[in-house]
Image (cartoon, rainbow, N blue to C red; front, side, top):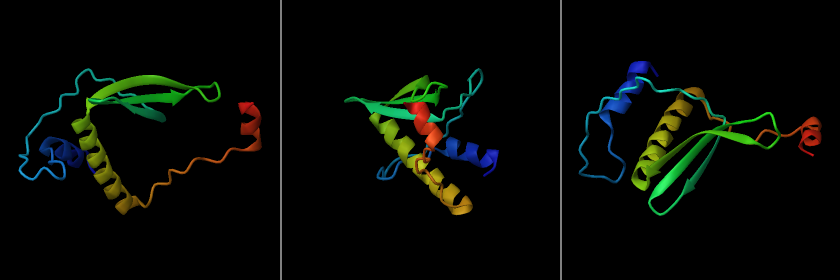
Length: 115
């Protein structure tokens, strides 16, 4: 998928499944000054009115994840994220094959380090 195709997906803002009379809105995303971060670990929490996404990286200490970023969104926005992400993953897997998300097996050396 090209950069233009990605931007087109963001601009058109396809309505969420189930919103039959939803209108498409054109949006322009301004990314000036935004810091891009990498995360290899995440967690999700929720309350009555919001979902909180926590992103971080595994530290050198065993079983420790250092949280780098936290984002709270409304329940509706969380559902839109879930639908959009699901659609993008289906497209990716149709082109590149199934993404393996199984937990990596630990080796004997890893087990010694955890103790």
